[in-house]
Length: 174
Image (cartoon, rainbow, N blue to C red; front, side, top):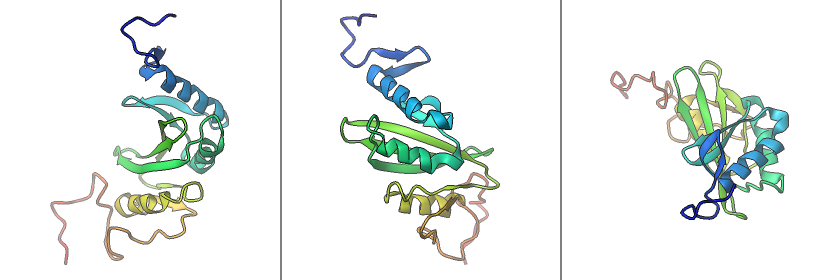
């Protein structure tokens, strides 16, 4: 299908299922799905960024493929965030490729009652502090992390202040 004159190169719509993705982003999403096919990846969008959701138990293996496969080559972890959706926690990995310059989001869901998943510190050392932060604030346990000691809070702090149910208005520090 030819692009219209007003549509800049690389901005043609990639997929009718994801109309906000440019052609290059759609191609990246398709490549990520192909590389991760054994993990049953779920494609999506985070804003205008391509996103892949994988099973939490496989996040370390999936991330290693995303980093090492030449079709993707995401050598850098920009950020790792945890989001509390009340019924589950979601870990969001923002990945960066230098050549070509592009971004990809990888998501994994864990139970609020048993927030456990493998650490990706063996894939990207930058994950060490991000995982410690998610452990402090949300209680996420990263199996294989070298040191989940508190990063932001003190050892005796009770609860997880990043979670929605944390009683901020009732909290008193002694």
